[in-house]
Image (cartoon, rainbow, N blue to C red; front, top):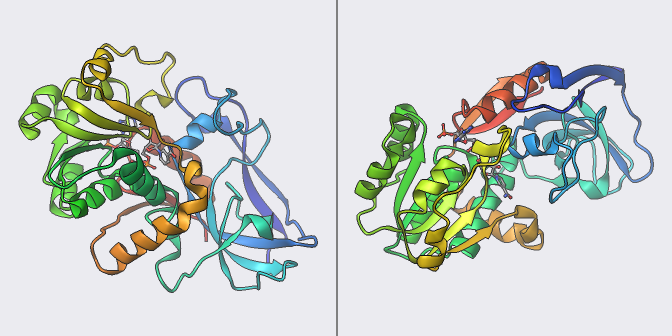
Length: 333
Ligand SMILES: NC(=O)c1ccc[n+]([C@@H]2O[C@H](COP(=O)([O-])OP(=O)(O)OC[C@H]3O[C@@H](n4cnc5c(N)ncnc54)[C@H](OP(=O)(O)O)[C@@H]3O)[C@@H](O)[C@H]2O)c1
């Protein structure tokens, strides 16, 4: 076992787009687990859009990463040494250890996972936070009914791909929005959405009207900005908007100025923010449902992998530019 641990720290806060200069690499002595603690060797690091928000010093639903702290993130890893009777060397665990090759965590902060049931990386993807977000966001906030039209943005991504497939399983007509032909071909050909609009081709408003001749009943929003503003013009009366993410605004210096909010009033649209933690006590319900669909072949899933911890900053930068194609991961070991 090596004696050192490589970590990536937040060096300074980005102004606008994230750059490599916002991170600092350090090699530190490997920690020793105390009573009730576990030493984990991380195998997979999940890269997620929320990480951009944690780099800002602003009040949000969780505190920001402090300068000099290890960048936040979920990992999947192997227990190397345990001083918690609930864990043994060789166990595969889901951890909050962040951007580092090894880490010591309290046993209470780890979740044992069954890597025989599904690949270990799936527990930070389709069977993890993004999949759970899709499940509760769609079913609890979106409340789709068979025959309704559901539109999903960032449709090929970790959350969007699951939302659309669950929508199809519910009997909805599902319209994806994604950037580029390759992503749209995948969304329709592989994931089984009814159609997909390439917003980068221009003319989103006309394309939406053509794809949704009876209007939109549920809109699952992952992007925000101009996309949300355009959707507001095609929402039906008493429709629902699941406000899950605003990735188009995360790097922006100024917030987007919405022009079509009047539609919420006129059409009695219900728009609710979605924060996955609010369903913490019910995660098991979503994982059970998602696992059943996955093992029956009803859910398709795709990953975008960068290799080596030193490439984690580049992976996050690419994700925030929309260059990922599927759930973004770093393979650490
Ligand atoms: N609230 C919660 O609890 C929660 C939990 C998980 C995720 N989220 C949110 O859900 C959204 C999707 O997350 P994810 O993990 O599934 O990521 P993802 O969809 O796998 O990746 C992000 C995608 O966003 C799209 N995108 C659209 N406009 C963009 C822009 N201006 N800049 C960059 N990307 C753009 C890109 O796809 P295209 O090329 O198709 O545009 C990109 O691939 C994010 O907004 C995230 O913050 C919220």
